[in-house]
Image (cartoon, rainbow, N blue to C red; front, side):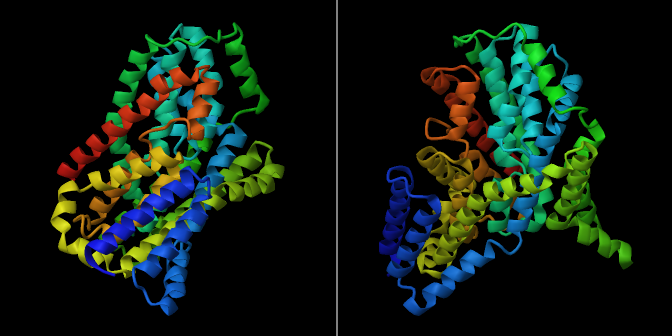
Length: 450
């Protein structure tokens, strides 16, 4: 099968996959694998080659991404367990000041969600939100939206959050995580501003029925006390900052071709996997310093349970991408490449937004879209590392557009924020639309200057 007929089969396959995931509630892994096998058969790939194609796609996802995702998630779990996330939050408050509670919460969420899942991050930081609402008399909804916004932006744009790591690896720039981090930070500016403005706007129009108790400040202090002595700022930052510095040093050593053992060691430690190994070791040291050494086994078990579904969905997406690459679909798309090139980074954004809105999970939207986009990058004229990194960010932007009732994050924000479902749509869902659009605008502007 070739030409337009194959394109129509591909579109039907994607539609079927969305129905399987969202309507029939079949697990994304099974849905994607089933669609990939069906597409391989209908695309005319010889039957004896189908198992090889599936095996190649599945195994390629585990070449290095598995270890990287596990290490990144483990670092986040340790920062949460030791109370280091609270230390980072206090650092942000001291830097920004309590006179700007909304901005402080937004930036706090943006920092904390780099290693910690946004759902967990909101639960961790919610006592701070409530305490600031009581101390500053700022509308509770404003602070809820600010916190949810900051957490969400870094969750989908900045590694070592599993989604962006998986997308970078699937699209061939897994060795350039520092580039994705840097561009992700730059792309965060516009949505942070837009989200903050929307939070202030909606905070004056939506009120919560729940009254905050008078002792919220004391409750927050009790939360910090429950961790015992919180780790210092330097120790809390080290598991995050040191890997970034190592990757930067590795890039410099590679570009300048430093000779000898020093150059080889810098390049070795600058590989994303090894840099995160160092970060994980620093996190384990932090765990031991805070007297939580006995929790390492349990934290590792929980981390593996958390990232397992992500890894397998990523592998399934890689299988689908491999099927697309091997089929004749690429030849047809290449012949009509000018149409896709006009869309550029907007195309992966729209695909990811479709997946996100239909099935709810940002991580599934990111990993699935990355698997689909990887073979299409040449047709989109996205070939250089910077262009591919921008495509990764565009996928992340789409994967937060929009969060509604089929997304667990929607329920975390509405329930902890004391919002009704209707107000949740007004405050949270519209916020994700605002920051998603602001993100893709910022990414497009970045593409003009980098």
